[in-house]
Image 1: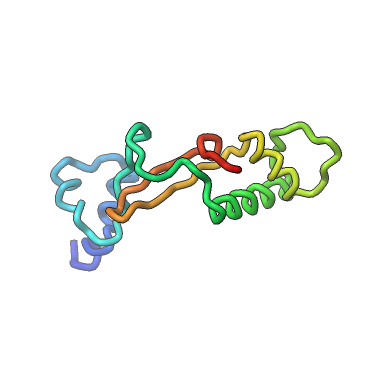
Image 2: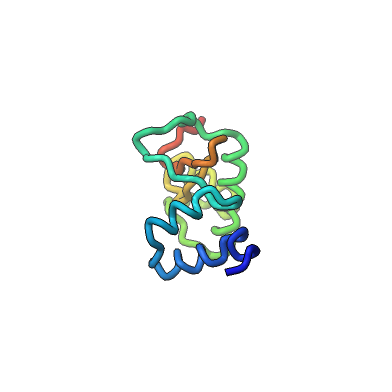
Length: 120
């Protein structure tokens, strides 16, 4: 192993794909730059349960794009044909099947389902 592979984590990624990483390898590679943080347990959440306007915009845009590309629609339609209007209706009924990953300053993250978040 040369220095470049160990800094980039290439060997670590290969071991993770094969699932054969040992505890010693895991501890030795933990402080490397570029590795993602730990996942916070769902019961211990630090961030607010409110959907921000930025998350709302991204969720609606992503879901509208999916709908326009013939993704299944999860709410009954009342004559709506606009993908954005359908996405707004799905959000109001909490039917959007997406997960928001919120990164924390310590490098860890929290995953929130859109249905768990409070949106006005």
